[in-house]
Amino acid sequence: MASFKTPALKNPSLSLSSKPRLPSAFSISFRDNLRFSRSSSRPQRRFLIVTASAASISSKPTVLVAEKLGEAGLTLLKEFANVDCSYSLSPEELCTKISLCDALIVRSGTKVSHEVFESAGGRLKVVGRAGVGIDNVDLAAATEHGCLVVNAPTANTVAAAEHGIALLAAMARNVAQADASMKAGKWQRNKYVGVSLVGKTLAVLGFGKVGSEVARRAKGLGMHVIAHDPYASADRARAIGVELVNFEEAISTADFISLHMPLTAATNKMLNDETFAKMKKGVRIVNVARGGVIDEEALVRALDAGIVAQAALDVFTEEPPKQDSKLVQHERVTVTPHLGASTIEAQEGVAIEIAEAVVGALKGELAATAVNAPMVPAEVLTELKPYVELAEKLGRLAVQLVAGITGVKNVKVSYASCRAPDDLDTRLLRAMITKGLIEPISSVYVNLVNADYTAKQRGLRITEERIVIDGSSECPLESIQVQIANVESKFASAISESGEIKVEGQVKDGIPHLTKVGSFEVDVSLEGSIILCRQVDQPGLIGKVGSILGQENVNVSFMSVGRIAPRKQAVMAIGVDDQPSEGSLQRIGEVPAIEEFVFLKL
Image 1 (tube, helix red, strand yellow):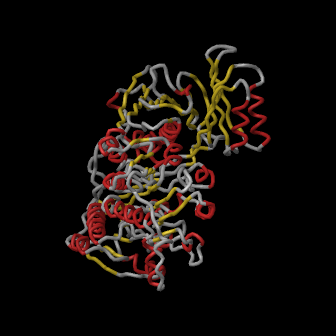
Image 2: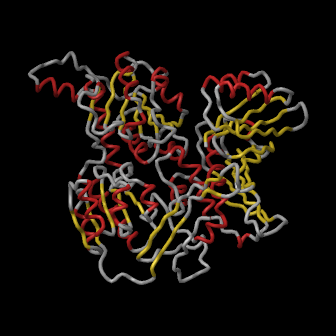
Image 3: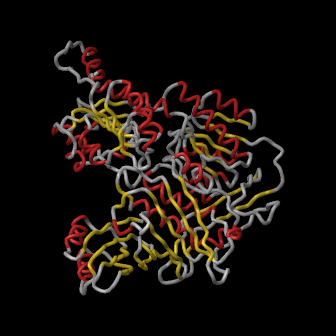
């Protein structure tokens, strides 16, 4: 059994509904995805360890600033801590110095590896990333060693948007190419004839803070702006004068495409050979988001084929890119070395934002910009641990069932329990449902600290309902149900009688199970991934689908059928350990009795 160490708290009855301040000396380790073996009900835990000292620290903490930070940020830090500005440290030098530091602030150039956390010997309490991306920080190691990680996600919004517009205009008028030509002693007016922006359609992919600011500025240039983002607010889009469309329409009708989505499993190489083929010939692409959202080799092919007329790129899959990169050297590509946040004003703003976050964390405050684990009372986590994974996976399932352009705005969570409403603290479960809803298509790391804040920032309204049922109060929950209102569904059978996407689950023998989809009862373990099929209930259908999966060596872990009545409509839920190929999924869809199906990745 894994052990849990309880912090020395003044109030031993502290619940998740309270908002504690961490003691001035604290250590946190919280691994939030619980895992269970199918062969045993005994959990293979990711667990929480919290230790805290009630004694105050008389001396000032030490903050190591490993990369240049704006003076305003340094001033804030110096009011609270001893500040050591040591730039361009080698990995070895950083590991040597870190054992004397309570906090570390970096930008993108310093790698905060597992070795750094090991070398800290437990003293390092906070790592601050001056910017939004945290690719250079080993989050797992930070959590393992009880170190809080915070970032500065908002201060560079305008700078990034302005750089996107600068690249858009420079690309359209061949500014960089003409400049290089003139400096080479040439005068090539006819070669560098550009295109006008006015009246052209710009598709903004990712309508968050930066994307919406780009849209505002593009409207000012006389462009027609459309946008795709599953979480975009229709009201906010209308206020700016932007039309929300689906992804297919966005890429097929745009003259210009500007990318502003995070790099996630869902967006990795989103622009590839297949999507380039669907674009209008002569489209022009701007990327100031993340390099990995574009398949760079596919982009070169699209440029050579004339599908993409030009590209303007500030970010790359590998940074810096290789000197002989075909993409960087391409005549019709304009490039800059990740300058999106590089303005004097943005740098000062980021410096202030990260300094405030680090100082707050050292004081024991739990900031909304925390990207890893918060402190959770161990006794509460111990009781709710089997339901944490269920909550997150129900959120992931529900959001993957959403179709259309309206986005997710209203979510209702119902908890069925034998306990009285005031005896069931659901804050952690709500956070995990929010995590499941948001993380698949966002770069935000959602946890107990920032879940409500993150949902509010995205216009996501989550309401909770407690349903008291008869039974023993020894078990905290009987079931969790997630409903998403006012959206279309990729799988029509997931729509309940009242019109919402509805999924429901239970924990059985320590394992999360999906028990209801729409109005259909099912029973399938939430491990691996799931295929949902609606079909006419008839003999041999399970065998046909199983045979298709078996031919591709896709292992079926669970299969369950819920039906209205014999020989009528039924929903089949199939748990699979591996992702079937597009061909196999297509063959499943071609089985005559199957009316619709969807693949859901957990």
